[in-house]
Length: 148
Image 1 (cartoon, rainbow, N blue to C red):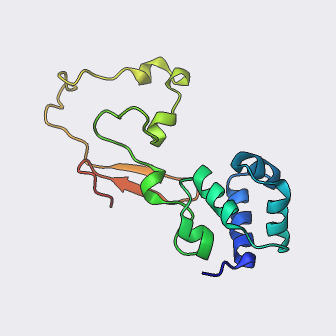
Image 2 (cartoon, rainbow, N blue to C red; image 1 turned 30 degrees about the horizontal axis):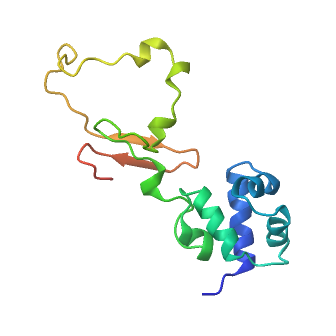
Image 3 (cartoon, one colour; image 1 turned 180 degrees about the vertical axis):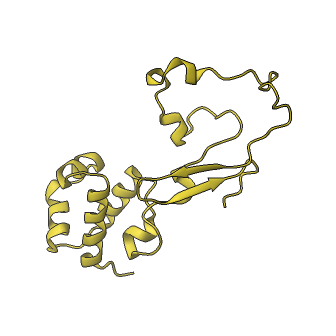
């Protein structure tokens, strides 16, 4: 498979802009030479397998198909937001686990006991959860795990 350097350059620039990141910072984060990214962005070199591998290892939410051939969305939907309806397992990487509850107001952290439903809400269950992203996209989740 041939990788189009010009298109990869555009997708790399799109990624950098979306993450408000410099090429220098990206190089440091994924562990490649700063010049390798500079050469890709200038069109001098096509990205190497090593660059693509390190990039995708570090940014696992990025769709490899999008990065390599420009197909599909930038992000993998399955990894973007996985909100479980049961208790999370240790080592989980959902967005919910990234929330720093110590900075939230204390009254929003308190959760009702599972045995004590809110008054007048005896048989009420979650119908759906909608997550809105800064790129104006959204995802809907239902308790049975299906996406809408």
